[in-house]
Image (cartoon, rainbow, N blue to C red; front, top):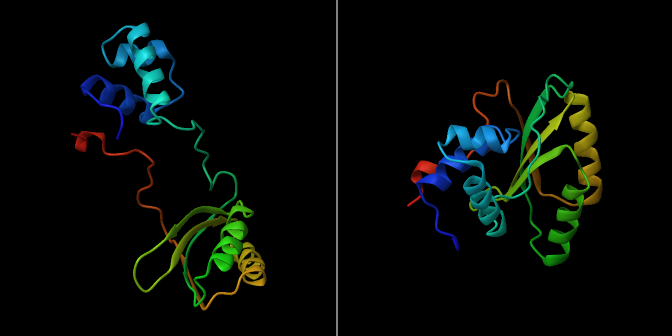
Length: 157
C-alpha cells in the first residue's frame, strides 16, 4: 500500500463504505471533523487508488433477479488463447457479477445473477457455445445470508 492510513482515514473510509451517498458535511460530522480536511483526505485516498469507482447497490430481487448461481468451472485448456476467449465471454455477459480464478481442483468460480433457472440455462448454453470447458457445476443459492463489499478496516496496521 503506497499511502499511509491513519485513524481519521479509517473513519472516513468506514463512513463511505457504509453510505457513499452521504454529503461531505454528513461525513465530516460523523467523523468529528470539518469539511475541508475530510475533502482533502478523500482526494488523497482517491489519488492513491484506495477509493475506486463509486456505484449504487441495487436490490436484485426487487428487480426480478431472483436466482443466484455459483458456477464452478474446470477446464483442461490453460493456454493464453483459451483464457482470452474465456475472459471475453465473461466480460460480455452482464449476468456474471463476479469471476475468480482459483487454486485447487476448481479452476474458476462465477457468481451469476439471473431471473430464474431458465435464464441460467440460456446463460450456460451461450457460455459453452463460446468456450470449451471440461466440467461445469452450478450451485443455486437458496438464501443470501451475508453480502457486503465493505473491507474490515479495523484490521489495517
